[in-house]
Length: 273
Image (cartoon, rainbow, N blue to C red):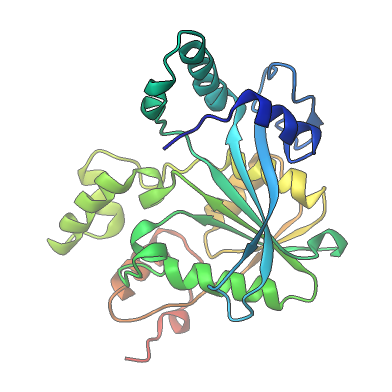
């Protein structure tokens, strides 16, 4: 994938207010200067995005976000290649940097307590429709619930969170281990990996910027997600239960989540099958 933008286009986007930077507290900082100490995010948008995944099929505002430090490495290399006449090598400017997304649904800027979902990427569930997890139904239900909310809210889609942070290749291995009898957490440990290695620091910055310090209602069953975001400085978060997509294919997976600490009651795990 290309991670490079022509400098002239970049400058135009900055002038138009379509490309900007925020610091670790979500406060805007000067874009044309080098990123200072701490975590800075570059944010591009808003981009109108008509959605087909929600029953309301809303047109949302999409923002793409990437860490300034990761982006600057690619931009520096691209500049060097261009100066040396090596534009034909731009196809090698592939990067594993995480580009996160924010969907602004409705008019949450007018809400006193926006509804929010921080959703970890899951190719098998979100894209392929796998029933081994409930990620796909959770994503669609979150879009519906936020669109149905009186004033809307935000959905933050976190890239690089596949398999609770272990990546798609390792996740495929854990599926084979699960098929041999291990649960989702045991499989991670068998590979020598943490139960959950996701980093929510970028999500915290984005919530600070877009939430503007307001109390937030977070669609999640995972208390660790609330604890991590609170520890990262996102104040006044209220958990809103988000149970959907339960069936016989993922029941064992969800029971393992419950045993690990997710707030799932027995009647949350009833299936229609």
